[in-house]
Length: 149
Image (cartoon, rainbow, N blue to C red; front, side, top):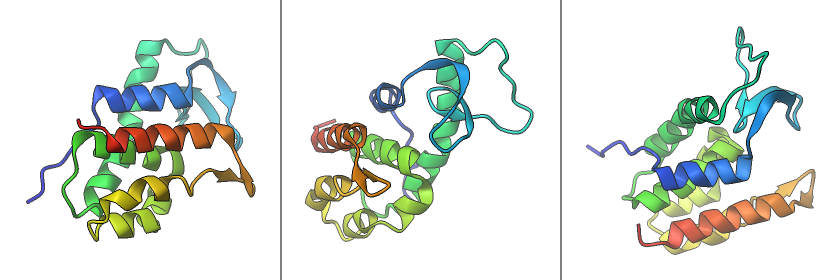
């Protein structure tokens, strides 16, 4: 049975860097009430005074569990910690459904590890346009994917 992996501090730092910290509740690009490091407020959650970075980190760790579970459930080949971290960031950013249906996952599960960085770089568009922030995020994921950890 495959060991369930969890994101490392390095992976969490990658997510934090790309999500950015906002102490006060704001509307994200999709119109959802959001706070901290991209935490979408759930029914009954109120943060009238905002959140501290420590609170935001705890919310993020809980939110990342869905992405961790998706990667653990869908990837059938061995991963290094850095590879896992890169995939969790990708999945957190784009959603488990996109990850599950991606060519990236299909190629990875065929042991085509070297195809992953190129597949990551295909996910840099929003509304049909290349977004610099997504390019930077995918590049960071690809770099982490290729690191030795």
